Image (tube, rainbow, N blue to C red; front, side):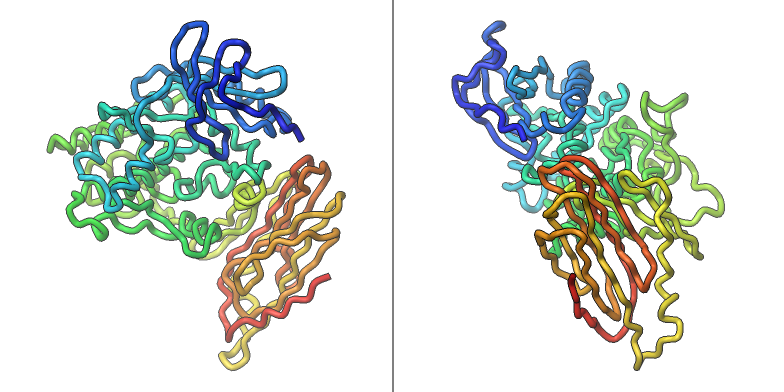
Amino acid sequence: MTDGPRLAAGTELDGRYRLESLIGRGGMGEVWRAVDTRLRRPVAVKALPAELADVPGAMERFEREAEAAAALQHPGITVVFDVGRTEDGLAYLVMELLEGEDLRTVMRRRPGGLPVGEAVGLAVQVADALAAAHSRGIVHRDIKPANLFLLADGRLKLCDFGIAGLADAATRLTQDGGSVGTPLYMAPEQFRGEAADFRSDLYAFGCVLHELLTGEPPFRSGSGLPGLLYAHLNEPPPRVGALRPDVPPHLERLVLDLLAKEVELRPASAGAVASFLRAEGQGTSASQLFAPPPGPPPAGFPAPGLPPHGPSTNPGTAAMTAPHPAGRQAPRLLIAAGAGVAALVAAGALAVLVLPSGGGTGGGTGAGRGPSDPAVPPATASSASATPSEPVVHKIVYKVSGSVSPLSVMVMPPDGGMTNQTVKPPWTATFKASQFTFLSVGGNTGIKSGTIHCSITLDGKVIQERSAEGQFASVNCMHQGSFYGGGFGAAPSMG
C-alpha cells in the first residue's frame, strides 16, 4: 500500500500550489486553503487519499472525470481550475476558494427545517446546477448537504463534481469509508450496485429537499446500515405534510415523485423540476412544463421512462413523466444479494431480486460471476405444511472461502446483530431459525491480492453467492426473507 506524502502548511504541489491551512478532512481526502503562486490567487486544493494509487485505473478515471467537471461553466457549480498528480503519487484537484458554509452546517442550526420560501429558493439553485451538468452527460452521484455550499450572498454552489465517480474504486478502501454516494441520500439503484444516471441525482435531490423542508432526511434507521438500505429499497418516504403542515401540497408531491423507488417514475429532468418550482412559486400552472423534452435524452443517459408513482394530485408533477403502461404492476423488491453494503463496510455492489405481483423471480450477478443467481424459493414454499403449533425450522448455512489467509468475515445471523471475525478459509457457519427477515455474510482479503467467495444456503438450496478477485477484494451475500413461525432457534455451529 502507498503511504503517500504527509501534507503540511507550506507544502508546494508541483511547484505551483502552496498549501496554507487545512479546511477539512473526510473519506475522500483533505481540502486545503492554498495559493496559486503563478496566478497569485487563493484557491482550494483537494488532495485525494494516497491509497487510490494502488487501485488499478483509479487515477486515470479521476483525471477523466476532473477534466469533464472543469468543462462545466455554471454559476451554481464550483469551478475546477486544474488537476494534477505529483511524482510521489498524490492526486489533487484545484478549485475556486469559496467563502461561506456548507448546507449541512446550516441545517444543524435549523432542526425543524427552513422557511418554505427559503427552501424552495435553494432547491431551484440545486436543480439548475444539476440540469447544466446533466445536459453534458455528467452525473454527480453524491448529492447531499455537505456537497452544497452556501455563500454569504445567498448563492448556492454544488461541489465535488469529478470526485464522486472515484468512489467506485474507493469502495475498496474501507478505512476511508468510501462509497458510491452517501447512504442517507443514495438512490435504490445505487444500493443495488447498478450504474447511477441523472435520475439517481434526482432521488438524492429529493432527499435533500425533504431535509430542507423538515430538518431530517426521509429515511433514518436505528438498526444501522441494513435498516437504512431496506428503507430506501422498500419503504415509502414519510409525507412532508405530516411532519410540517405548512408545506404546500405541490411541494409534498414533488418530494414523493423525486423519491420514487423506480427510476422511470421520477421527474423527466432537473430542468423540469426547476421550472416547476419557479412556476408554482409564482402561483401559475406548471402543467405544460413537464412533458419529457423532445428529442433524445442528454448524452450518456437512457431515455427517461414512466409515470409518477401512484395517482398524483398535482398536474404539474404528474406531467413530468410519461403515462404508465397498461397492465404493468409495480414490482416488490426483495434484497437478495451483492456487495453494495460491503461498499459501505467493505466493498462491492448490491443486487436485488424483483418479484412482480403474482410470482416470478429474477436475480443479479456478482463480481466475476456470469450466470444469474439461483432463484430464491417463495416464502411460503417450505412452510406449506406447517401448523401454528409446529413451526418450520429452516437451516441456513453461510460459507466464505478464498485463496488468501486469513480473511476478514462480517456475519449478520438470522436473529439480528452483526459480528466481525478473522478466520482461516474455508469458513462455515450453520444456523437454525423458524423465522428471519435479513441474512448477510461477507468478507474481504484486506491488503492481500487473491480470490474470495461467499454463499448463503437455505434449506439445502444456494440462494446467493458472490465472487471477487484482486487486492482489497470483497464480497457480500445478502437475502431478505419473510419466514414466520414460533420464534428463532438460532443455535449456530461454526467450523
